[in-house]
Structures are given as C-alpha cells and as structure tokens.
Length: 413
Image (cartoon, rainbow, N blue to C red; front, side, top):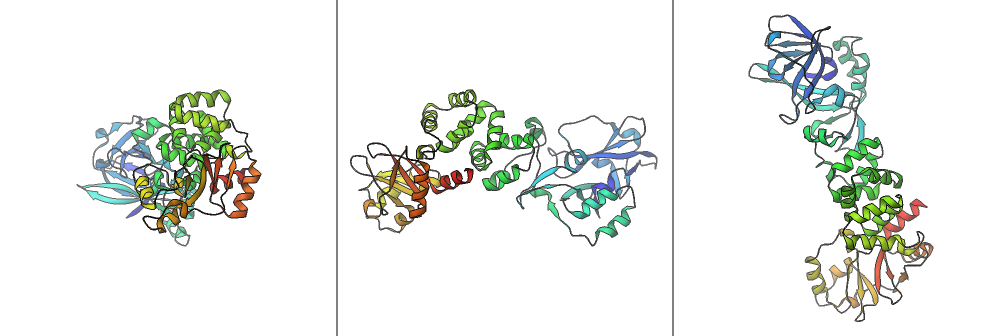
C-alpha cells in the first residue's frame, strides 16, 4: 500500500500488547545504512521522555496508526543524531534540486512504499511530491480523515520526483558527510543550468553547493553565475579552495572575478595561486576594463604556419586543452608573428599533408590589447567571427577573444 508522510505525522503508535505508546512526531532515514528506508520513528506522549522505534520493531503501518511488534519497554530513549535525515525537518517544505528536471522545487509531501521483511513492515521513500496533491494533504492534515483527502486529490494534477533524482541541499559540510550527500549528480548538469538553479537558493545553500563541488565544476558554474553572486561566494570561501577554483578558470574569467573583489582579498587569493597562473591574471587585471586586453584569454593554441594537418593533430593529441580552446588555431610565421587562424572544422576536413597556411581564413584580422572593446564588437559583428586574435606591438599573438566573451561583455553593459 502506498502511504504519505503527512498521513503518518501524528499517527498513534501502539505496542505489541495494544498499549498506546505515543504519537509519531518525526521519522528518520539513516543514509549510511540504507538510502531510502525509514530507520527510526520518534514517538512522544505528554511529558514522558520521547522514545524511538526502529524499523524492525514496526509490525504494521496504516494512515493514522502504527503497530509495533515489541513492548514499550523495548524502545530506546530518543537521542538526536546528526547522521539521520529527518523527513519532517529536512525534507518537508524544503527546497531541493530536481536533477532530472533541472530546477529547484519545494517538497510538499513524501511518498512511501510498504515492504514486508522478516515479519515487520519497512517503509521506503519512493518519491517526493512537489505538486498540488501534496499541498492539499498538508493543508487538510488533521482537519479531515485521510480517506476523504485521498478522494479529493484524485482529480488533481500530480507532480512528483523519484527519490534517486533528488539532490538535497545541506550547507554544513560536516553534516553532508554524515548524511552521505554527494554532488556527483550535480556535476553532470550543465554549468549554466546549475548556476540558474543556484540563483533561486539562499546564500548559505549556494555556498554549500560550491564548496562541495570539485574545482573544475565549481569554476564552470561561477563563470555562469551573476557577477554579484560570484563575488559573494568567493569572498566567503576558504582561501585555498577559492584559489584552486580560480586556477581552473580561464585567466580572463579569473581576472574579471578578482577585479570585483576588495583589493586585499584579491591579492590574498593571487598569493595562494601558482606563480605563473597568478602572473597571467595580474597582467590581465592591469588592462583597462573597456579594452580588448581585459577580454582576452591568454590560454590559446598556436602552431607554425608550415606545419601539416597530420603534424598538428598528432601534437594536439598529446596535449591537454579545454574544449573551448580548440575552436580555432592561431598560426605564427618563422619570426613568431601572427599570420592567421584555422578553424578546427577546416583542419579536420583537410588532407594529411596539407599545410596550415593553406587553410587559414580570410581576411587576416587582429587587434592590439589596448584597442577599445567597441572595435572588438564591430569586428565580431561585421565578419561573424568566432575568435579574434590579440597581438603585441611586434605583431606576436598574446591572446584570443572568443564570441562567448563578447556576448558576456555585451550582457553586462
């Protein structure tokens, strides 16, 4: 039989002899033992010490009633345990992340399934109710009988999330550990989706999620978040963790983030970063915020223009690059001056011995790091560019601007 958490809250519990033990005030899941089983029932009666019935002490369950297979004397006194997930306190009315639907929702009720085991009745959480039926059950709980409520909810539209698609939000790292809450599912979401969901959460919840993600995922999410929220999150992170995340960001994104922090905070974080990474970011922060230099990424792929397609692919396979660095490849001549770009699409379609200089796109476009961002916008618009190369005074490439950098800058204007 399917049950709902609301039907068990306040249910009368009787021991094996039929004596009234108390009413259910809470029930718990012990994730370390079983991810979805109700492991303990908190029973209270007047001024008596609250008791706890374990899952294997429950004989049967029905809406409004629980019968035990032991006497009251066999029950233990209740002692709080941070390793238990409280259904009423930690789930009901709480915001959770729906991994499958990629959204933040509020839990109205919890659906339970009965399972017989060794003569006792275990209840397993199957899904959470985030729709109107759950809200109606909460509203009418204790006002009308469960039978009437079930009749009323039949015609209402249902909206539930299977338990395996639920990601609980727990800001406290120590409690996350005790509850065995991981963010493996979150890390499979697109950073833009996760960032959008995080904007609906409280500051503490956002902080908890970022702190629990691996550095690469956290960096990708921060790059998608609103600038104001990103600043708040990084300021509150432990400096070592914040520096590790900044290392995983593109230098231009890290520079933009640090520029929004108080100078003392940004310097502390730069000191935590490896020397070369920190130097790159400092160089970018030195550019005026409306120049091409402030938008460029100093991590880009460049090869000699006389290289063949076969040689370039062999070299690329042996290197580690972010995918977004491989949209276009910058070419240099024998004097290390910029001589053009080749899109990866053209590279893949070329023959093995074809030289890179034969594949470059026209016209040859570049700007200096001091160029105004308006000039950059105009070039991207006029030539439908995906990347633009930045050169120094001697025409040597020092960075690139990608179209997503342009879009981000335009959105912020």
